[in-house]
Structure formats: C-alpha cells, structure tokens
Length: 369
Ligand SMILES: Cc1ncc(COP(=O)(O)O)c(C=O)c1O
Image (cartoon, rainbow, N blue to C red; front, side):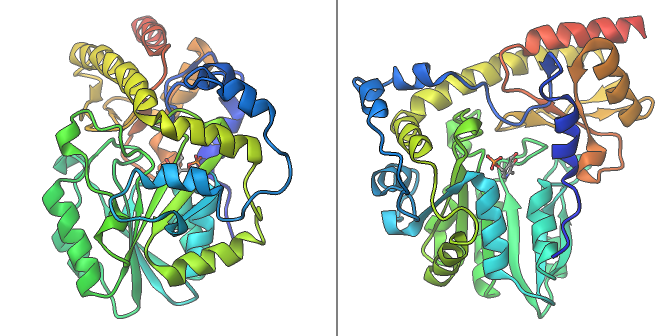
C-alpha cells in the first residue's frame, strides 16, 4: 500500500494550534463536554458511570438506534460506527476495491476519498466540478467516464470544499445511473443537515437501495470533531460485513466515553445543527459584504450548505497570499493546491464564531498591501 502525505492535514499541522484565526476550518464551532452534557438531565451523572471496557464492535446499539433517525429505511444493524468518518473511508475502500478496478470520484475533494481508493490499486477518474458551472457536476461527463471495470461512484454532497449541494433531480439521476450500471455509490454526507434552505436537503443515499453507502460523522454539522465518531449506513450486507471484519484490524471498537457523548449529541442533533447553522448564516452575511467590497480581488460563489466555500484569488499567487497572510496577520486560509487545484482557489471556513474578527484582520492586511 502506498499512501502519500495527506496535504491538507500536513498544512493544518503546521498552523492549526498556533494560529489565532482559523478562517478555513471545515468543522463547525465546538463546545466543552459540560455544555454537551447540559443538554440532557442527568447526563452528567450518567457520564461518570460509563464503563471503560471494550465496547461492541459495530457501535453501541442505543447509539446506532439514534443514528438511524437520520435515515428512512435503515435499521441499527445496518449502521457501523467508526473512529471518525476517516476510518470508515479507509475500510470502505479496502472492502470494496481491488487492483485494476476503476472508480469515479467527485473532484476536487477530500483527499482520502481519492487517495485511499488509489492505494487499493484502483484506477481513479476525477468527475470534475467546475467553478464556471457553479461547482455543479455534469451528468453527461459521468456517462463518458464509465468503463467496463468501473466499480463505484464516489460523491460528496454537501461538498467539501465548495459548499455545493446537488439538485434533487441530479442526485436521483446519479443513483439511477449507479443502479442501472451495477455500481456502488459511496455517498459522503458528512455535511448533511447543514443546508441553508431545508427544502434543498437531499435524501440520504442509503435509502435509495443496497447499491448505496452513506457516510456520516459527528464532527461537521454537529461540531464535535474531538469525539471521533463517524459511521456508515447501508443495506448492502456484503460491504457491511467486510468493513466490520476489517475493523477488527484497525480500532476493534470505538471509545466508550465518545460513544456515550455521541449518543447525547445525536439525541439533540437538531439543536446542535441549529446553533451551528446560525453561526454559518451570520458569517455568510459578513462574507457577502466582504466579497461585494472586493470584487476586483476574489470570485465568490455562495455555498448552498455546509461550512465552506472555495473562492478564487484574482491577482497574485494564492499559495504566497495564504503564506503571507498567516505569517503577517495570523489568519489561516487554505490554498487550493491542497486539493490539487491549480486555479488559485482557496478554502474558506464559515463555521467558527470568530470569523468576523478574522475577516477584520484580513481586511486590514489587504489595506496594508
Ligand atoms: C468530505 C469529508 N469526508 C470525510 C471527512 C473526515 O471526517 P473526520 O475528520 O471527522 O473523520 C472530512 C473531514 O474534513 C470531510 O470533509
């Protein structure tokens, strides 16, 4: 297996814990354990009693029952809880693919989706989202990408890093296409429930049939990345069982305190999502204003969901821009090159409370320049 360094993680490792203003985070504002426990009566006392032995490998049944509420057709035995979405991505790719298979992947995107697939020996074709199309994917292109050895389509909607949300019609067509061509559809839905307009929320992939695997996590919309709890939901028994058996070689089971806290979070997920969506919407208003004032410097395609956008710097080199900004103003933006983007985009994070202050610093920096 050959896995190159995870560019985005290495970039964050350099700055994340030493920079005051993270203006490119993908997760929403987090909270201390005490605030989460305060959402439920007696949760604090119960937390003290959590047993610190090994836990059930598939995930605590009561947690899986809570997670099921995200879906229409999924039973607790069709949820496999992991250590973050990251472990689930890793296990899915090795469970589903082998050398000489071919996979089609939504691009640009979260690096491990393509990289881990590639590490299994697969051939990977990017299915390109283009800024000039408002970051939409073109279904005709998908038809041309399919080969006789294609095994799966991997999509991420709401999308990291563009904030693009597929239309209902396109989403249903992708599912239909996967079913007709006997392909798996891995649907990375870690930003689901953060749509700015409820009517645009897509049904979960796993509810379309056993060709689909939905990926979820507590890190993003609900803002609890430190719990490291993610999951897959699928009616595909073969994939489920293979992933479950591989999990014995990675983490065996999940952290008991994290599972307890994740269950509290999932019972209160609408409150958490509402709180975070409030932060995002306030921040969007700040960004709308900012980009309106700087049309000569940046493109701005307003996201439709999630905690990120992918604007483009119109003058100069984005890597140099981000480098100087973090060193001189203490504001971190993520250059698009971390996504193999060569068109001067950068990732902007919308989920943190200190965004207005970070934008003030950015604006001061621009004025100085
Ligand atoms: C699209 C996408 N999928 C999966 C993950 C992994 O989530 P986690 O870090 O919570 O495991 C991320 C994290 O940024 C992501 O953006």
